[in-house]
Length: 329
Image (cartoon, rainbow, N blue to C red; front, side, top):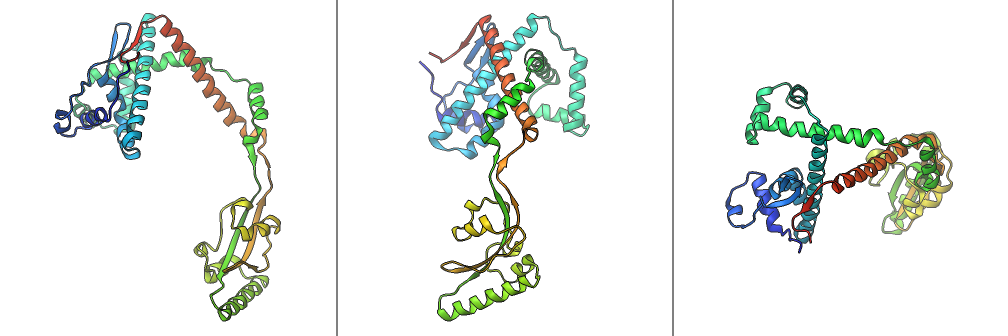
């Protein structure tokens, strides 16, 4: 029978992880140091899994609540446990091969990290270790394992991942619709509210005609929009970002489909507004060229190939190891 991961587990462990008061822990009877998994002779405790989750706990708390929070915690716990199992399997393979990471390599990495993250302040680094209740030796052991896992993964996965130009081209042709670029226009709008009475509407119509004449005589559209437009984008000179004609207001769609770049529309009358529109530029519909998307496609295919190779490698390691997840049926 599978063990539940009730929300109180999350609350208790998060309280422990983030150094909050012990009151929450005292009110919960949760054993966070029970076994979570065994990989050969290596035991992974529940406490290790929760510690691995510590960096994402605040974000989970901010983003989710109630049953959704509990579900996301369960998902994150399972993912973290899986990663710890993989880590243990890789370390077992590293040791079986007689692999070693000399102290000098580890110390060099620590020096690099102190320079990068602590601006060369070794005392600050030691202070952070003390706050985390870790000794330098313990940190070196953790870093050594991380470096070993990285080396093994690079050798077994990254170096073996290969994507050919033919595969990249085939991916482009098979999924060309992903690279379709719809027609877009860059435009500006001057908007005038028509007014409630016939008299107001007559005044506004006359104002719109006067504005149109100024624009015909060469006045700058953006300057006039800032001065006279009553639309929400008046401060930006009435300018909108690149948009598909279908995404603009219905009363402007036909104009934006047909008005040539650089031209100003006639007065467009809607139920409660009057519009003047200028199209600055057009992008015709079409497909991104293969050269434009070659590198992103290659990067994506390479990532998928690494995932495939890693999954196959981990499966092989599991076949030659004893792996047991506690709580699984």
